[in-house]
Length: 150
Image (cartoon, rainbow, N blue to C red; front, side, top):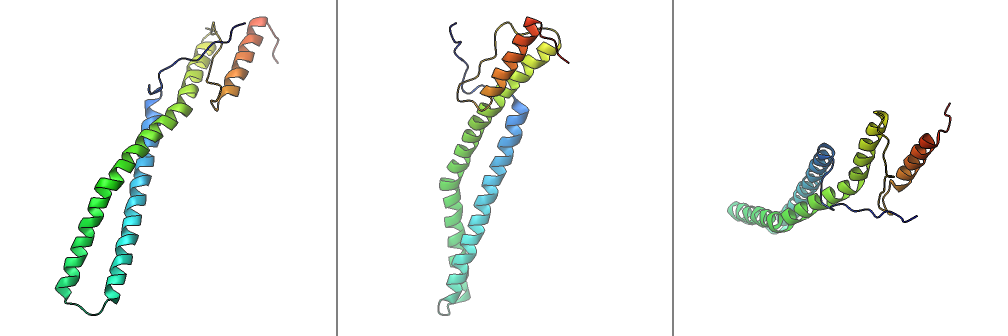
């Protein structure tokens, strides 16, 4: 028997609600991490500036303003691309996890409605849920063969 190959678009989002929820959560975590690390950096630099020999207060304010501008530029040119890459990676990872589960859920719902699948469910061999799909296919085979269940 020839083994069926899995074919599907790599970027089609199956379960929008799940993907958007987790992507937004991860984006907020990345942004919070940037803000916390920025605050720690700012206060560390500021504390080190206060150790310097006495300066005019206007110089401290000027230095503080320059530090804030530098940190904003770092965030825009360094942090923003990282956030965008994190969101894309998050969508890709979630697609890999939720896509197979979404297809299995649709197939189980059709089976409950009395429409057994004609072909076995096929996931990629390296999918986390490949064993679950195999077990489901065995269950459908048992139902078709007339196995008695308790």
